[in-house]
Amino acid sequence: MKLEDFDFDLPEGLIATRPARPRTAARLLLAEGDAIRDLHVSDLVDLFRPGDRLILNNTKVIPARLAGVRERDTGQGRVSAKIEVTLLEPSADGCWSALAKPLRKLKEGETIRFSDALSAEVRGISDAQMKIAFNLTGTDFDAALAEAGAMPLPPYIAALRAPDEADKTDYQTVFARHSGAVAAPTASLHFTRELLEAIHAKGVDFTEVTLHVGAGTFLPVKVEDVETHKMHSEWGEVTEAAAAAINATKAAGGRVIPVGTTALRLIESAAGADGVMRPFRGTTDIFIYPGYRFRVTDALMTNFHLPKSTLLMLVSALMGRERIRAIYAHAVAQGYRFFSYGDASLLIPDRGEP
Image: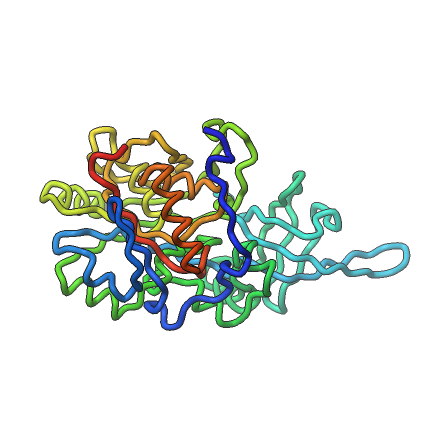
């Protein structure tokens, strides 16, 4: 498989920079077998069946974009430099790996001040990243970060506009619980509490899992031979209760439907080759592309993904490459809104398809 097999033309005007309001007003492309229907997210109540189980990623996005100032004493006096920092992930020693712009203006041991309350010391610098230690921990850190930070909008949105106060709500799911993500599980952004309650009243169950989405989700595939791509790793957890609930649904003949590619990648990582879910806690770098045999996933709700991305490869694995080409051609022709704040799809493959 070559990278160009997963390319398509996308007009820039179809890149969504704001979500639909209300959330459930977003459009929904239903692809079931060979059929395509143009619906809305609010129609999901009629599409799920009693006995289905939706898998929700309850990760919480942190306001990981920080604007700071580095000060340094020189022979010409005290000089300062503005530094933009994007947090990537915490490490076991309490430090954070982060991106900095411009990284060349920093030295190990220097302090970056983000607000009166929040600052960080540079503990190490590599070619592209740095390691920093904040002056606060625990709830004090969370509060100071919430005050000083901005939501880490994806590059394709950040290139068109700056993050603002609205993003602190828009770029967070209504069931976000566990802080640690620097990107949202965007298919889940379409749900309101009212929609979840209506779906549950129909006999659909929910299981929450946690996958802290990292900035690596936006990294481009640079190799021409897709199968040689090295996937980034992300931390996730499937509890014993979650695994048992998914197994019970499969045993009863219900469908397991992840909401978003992050939830899908996590449950597929936790499932054995026998299709049995097991508790999971750790990192996963699972790379799903055509030829992959799904272990527990029966369908997927997801947004529309970037050309040549690993996520487009994932949905191609689920539905088949030619089928996804047709689905995406339809979405472009019908003016669906793409990417993180865009519209949604519900992908239901034929049982017999690889």
